[in-house]
Image 1 (cartoon, rainbow, N blue to C red):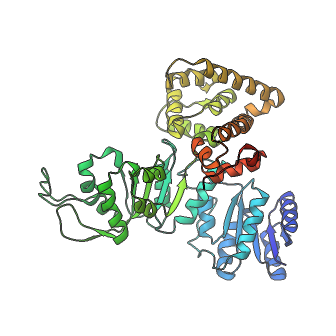
Image 2 (cartoon, rainbow, N blue to C red):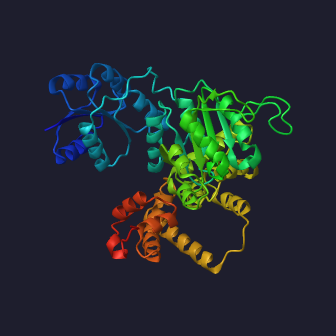
Image 3 (cartoon, rainbow, N blue to C red):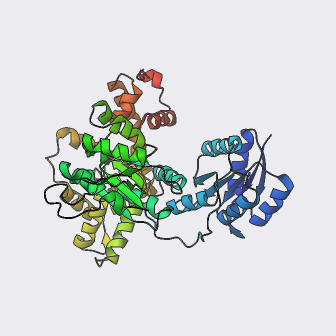
Length: 482
């Protein structure tokens, strides 16, 4: 029987985690401080260490980093209430097997422990120590469960040169992710070069990417370095990769396969010393099926897939982001503003079709146009109306809006604090998610894959939601494509 050492200064967490691990068949020892943990390591020789970051007598990440040198075979799982991208990356740098943000799901923790016990390799090697309490400016904002998954993927790949394909709706922050991968990785001292495939004329894409020699085409009066050369030693971000013409896709595939290229009109071979991060708001698998994107290039790019969640699926992140953008606006010289509880509720209830980009633009507009220092719900409503004039509201849309307003009023009556604690969005979505999923499943004859595509989520996400909501897929047809 395996023994797990749980280190946390919160007695309730030690108790709950201990009970969950014992139910999973493990023996458990606990400690409230690093000093107690050191004694327990000697006494019990645990198979896995589960540790908090902030402890009364030191830092769990520093301890994990030291243990990766002293006891390299001991897997460490890090728990942290400071659930940011920086913490996730530093946990990986410290040699941690897994990082779990608080609050965490006990089932996820027990699976992580099982994975740690079953693993065969050594933990990630120790990195240079950096003080956890000296947080740098964060490249990504958000503490939602959806963003924690993004952070964990980034933390695992920043120390590699693996190619990453970032997918997500427009405005979700795909370039920010690419910059975070660059800034936190081993190529941080090199250049970060971005190119938008949708903005380059078709006949100039190859010259933009690979450069050109003098006389290669009309107007080429001298040699021009392409983006691959400009990004040498750093990161090349290929945005809107789904808009790349097929002939240019063939050339790009060859470069990714061979690691070298020649400029347009040139003969000299140049090594491609770059890390590739590509991004798209399109379904590339559908593009492949339609013959508009090369299947072999798709697999070359999709080494590490990273799906960015839309803002409407990020719960309380709306409030965090809105406050951050208002602070940034004030730093840029715009009037300093604050958001009332009603304003935050109004922002949380919005659908955000333009995602984070739409929210940033809206908050800057509010900073300029709001009459008072404290922005209220009426100011937000006015700004949202101005942001999306659109067609007149249809009767069906009016009925839906009335239903949502009635739902919000009921939530307010049952739990008034929901309007102030950042949970309103999640509560409303929880009410409508079940009928939405059942209706979409029914519309697609119970086919989960098609239903997931219709809702813009992957099939695994749909399955998790079916389990969480207690929906029997078989009762809705439950079919999947063969």
